[in-house]
Image (cartoon, rainbow, N blue to C red):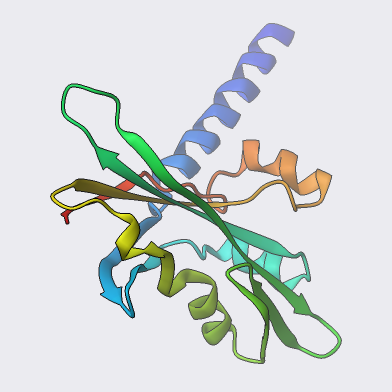
Length: 187
């Protein structure tokens, strides 16, 4: 009888876990654009499908969250390993101040900038959009070269309280990690 009850609960939790994982909206990047502005290679993009109801609840309870963005630039070489030129990690941090009912955001690529808003929609927009991120001076790229920009985003688990880090295992619906998005260009 104990074995049957154990199997039932194991089966029940597996169904809940897989049901939860199956209906998670896949986070992704969109509107990825590179350009040359003021002699610099810049990139802009947006992150979508990351704010689930569970993540919103965690944020509105005052838990600080961090979105980590990874941007790489490779020189593509035939018959040889591609050469990594740039490897950038960007953090967007947000905390909801429950007493003042305001969202406080910091972006690591805008060092002295602290954004404060009362609008959750505006805070979400700030957290998920990167516009005109300077990668490197365009002159540093060789002529007639092929290059790849890779971009990835994830919810950083390192800054979460310890009890919430373990919750990621049981609730994949509010954690996310995108695939690598690759942009090819010639110079």
